[in-house]
Amino acid sequence: MQRRPFLNRASAAAILSLVGLWGFAGNTLAATPAEARAEIQKMRATTLERLYKVHPAARADVQKAAGYAVFSNVGINLFLLSAAGGSGVAHDNRSGKDTYMKMVSGGFGIGLGVKDFRGVFVFSTTDKLNQFTNSGWEASAQADAAAKAGDKGGAAAGAITVAPGVNLYQLTENGLALQATIQGTKYFKNDELNGK
Image (cartoon, rainbow, N blue to C red):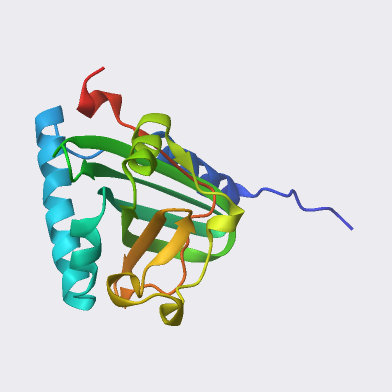
């Protein structure tokens, strides 16, 4: 009996597609950094508007926080490999400063398709926000958690705690996600858009 190679042409093409997505993660189609920043600002506005529509109490959570970050993520799942890339902006509510960021993730998962979702991180303290923007952040396996509305009151109900002092509202096409899917995701500054 002849053994079939582990990787056939379709699998190899899938891997190359994922590597390509990983390599270009966080890049927009904008021609200039100014256009890219404008696209991200527009994405932030529409994402927050959508979040407030599906979960009105989230507005108070975002406004009273030390800061927040909004990301748009496109994920591709082909066979047993998955990858995602996106861009976003972190906002310091006290200073008004924006920090443009990228995100990338990769791993193994069964399925086929493309998923587009948005995430809104809410930081309870300036230290948590600064750690996220200045040092970057990697979502560990422990970051995948279910939303437990009964454990939280008011605005934070519906948010998913992904780290101490950091909540996440994750939006899908169907509304507010009840399960965080950020395991293995890295967030870091976009030097091109912030200036070095």
